[in-house]
Length: 84
Image 1 (cartoon, rainbow, N blue to C red):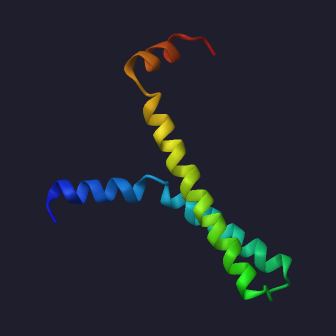
Image 2: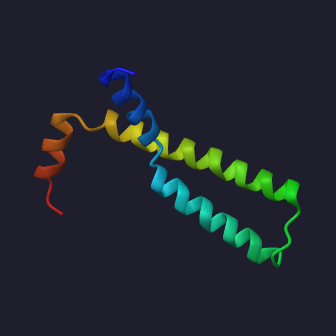
């Protein structure tokens, strides 16, 4: 894989904020276990975790793309000039 391809692959992997996704997934898994007293229904538990994973990847990606779209130099200058 060339350097550019590796950089693109790394950028796509970092796009949904993998650390945040991992933390939310761990918390969801733990709360799911606690709520079911350690014996969740495997099918429903898998669906819960899959839905949470998809949601977190979507939220992280949308957040990053929105932040990138609004991070123009003129928007940055305007936000710095505002008090507060």
